Image 1 (cartoon, helix red, strand yellow):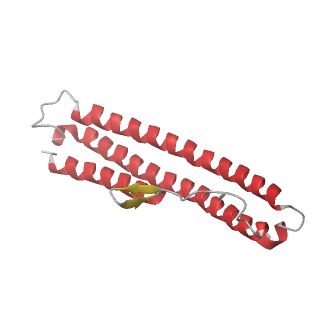
Image 2 (image 1 turned 60 degrees about the horizontal axis):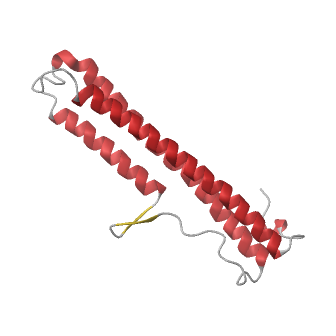
Image 3 (image 1 turned 90 degrees about the horizontal axis):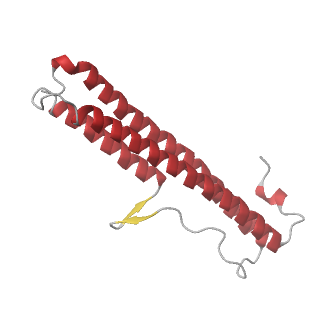
Length: 158
């Protein structure tokens, strides 16, 4: 990869701004697509978990007892898949966000005086209950939810 300064030799600030905005738009689209797929996968996994485990025809007092170990193991597999999907999603989104940071840095170095242009990108993530949430935080929360499901499976196993 060439240093950022090597890229700004023959481009005017307006063209650089348009290039940066277009590239950031594409990275934002990637984040949106990846998030949509992540949420769809998580919804399917939760549906499988609750359909297979919590809505079974078994008597609730014997749910996941010794005779239903295959169901118990399958539930752990589903939870594991949810955790792996959350980690993979966080890594994929983090890559896109790093690319956006790289583009912003390139824009600052290329533009010189960027005060006549709007920001090329906003801040990533948002706040929920005063806590800043980004892709890594959201993935950690989803892993914690799946971890809680596994703990509940063990608690209510017999």
